[in-house]
Length: 376
Image (cartoon, rainbow, N blue to C red):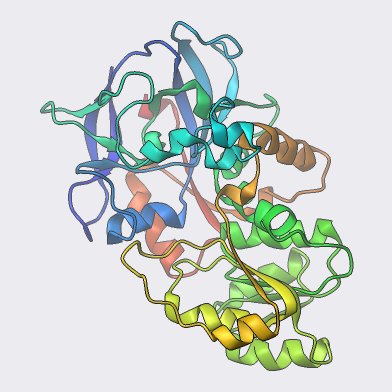
């Protein structure tokens, strides 16, 4: 079918809305009418080249929710009419990683940047001129329609608003899991959250629900610091330098038992500063994405050893998307997770560049593209 999508044809260029053609679902595939897509910072990494796809043009978007319209052979637990969220990492449940309980590290994820379908290894999306398109993480939620593998599709409660549901396709699940799974925050611990965007606000809520004592939110944007206080932070700081003294004072020198790093772009030169606000025996979780070409890290190895600190990487919150996505949405329905206030602004697809400008200038916790009948 012919539709439209936001694509880039080279690095450091604005998103362009162009006609694309999407194939019909084959075995194990699902066609979805998209209703909402979150505008995650990771898609901006496509623009800068920090996350290099295997080719151009690239169809962006990996955080979305919609309605199933058609299923291919072999799809048993999903049917037309179902409301679904897209998991940006497929989770097959059968590979060695999934069997070991690491469903966020499913072996199918090895092909996330290759742009070819899990089902048959072909390009399922093409430009109007017939050139293959590389969809972000095999999804491409910056389009009103998608055809994806069933391992990326998670059925959800139909009462959940789409603009809220899309957030758990990446940002909220990643942030919340970074706190409660990868960070393993325990009641009474002091926690620092560095970077208060969509992922950081998810981590902050995870820390609140895990029973953290003091929650230190660090972000250069005053408006975001104010929002962090509304979401449960106990102290806020504009930068690591001011946070270091503040955290030391509040904790009597103990520092943060857990530090969750959710900045827009992770830089190797900053890693030691994140560990500097982490307590001895504490854990610093690196959730933020850095450039794949950045291999230089500043780290005081002696202090890492002598103070027995832990440096932990994580993706998708270290959990199981097919379990965690419905669970977090059930918490939203129960009033235990504030997703409504995380949606700062909604945009049309044609306003995508405005949305990313707002994100980069610190005006959004999360911007959401909302599709309407005019997009069909």
